[in-house]
Length: 390
Image (tube, rainbow, N blue to C red; front, top):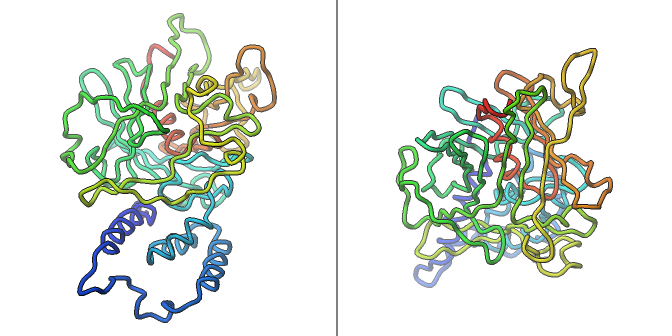
């Protein structure tokens, strides 16, 4: 299976193009289309062509044509970023930034995780078919690094580049010594005013050194805790996730979750950026600027859905709609915790579910208001052994 994907390659392609577009030699632009038959195409006709490509190539792997169109030149990219909708509205992951944006409101995006025990690495794929373990579209990768007092999971856009100093680095998950509490860190600020924590870790992660030109930040975006089970009572793990930048109102009708719209460039003297999307969803347009968790209400709290005990099977059961086939203490479903005195169907809807389907294969399905990155990090916390919680 080819772990390298066009989502990863696209970042490098776009970064290189930004640099080339800013250079001129002998007064002439380096645009690759200058001498082609597309150079004099009327803008209205070009837009119509690209709109038809975007609407017809609506599934991977043929959706890579949409990504390629966005890498041709500045004008093509400008059109593509206007017509390609975010996952919240389209239910489709297109550009690399899509993994940092909330999923759709009305359905779950189906993914799966493959674990490689020998290297302690984990790979996230997008399901391309209804099969539980198809070849998939590569999205993210993570590697586990053990330290004396904690464990780090470095999350990357590239399957073979797991260093924090890489331009592919997008965040990490850190556990305490017991593996019962975790903090999720984003490499980019999740909202305006977010504060970056100072890292005590050395500037080496794995075998790669951190480049001073790479803005590898550490913004805490979630806290995950597993309830201790000192009495040894029967039942699955009990967990709770506090999604700090996401307001509790995000799951309500008209609620809005912060949405990242760009990745910074890791090349060049300044940290300029490539915005893929500028338009907001209809909800955001009605509600004004994108809100953060400290404006108006507390953060979104997720808890594992309580399973029921099946007398005939003699086990705890949850309805995963056929997406989970192997019983495991790692299996869970997360729902929103209702504020005191509130109730509603939105608090019964599964926001994230994770379960085992093979020795080293697990399904991961998520929806609004969390992103693929956040869902992946939460699922990584389940892989740690938790003797005091089981």
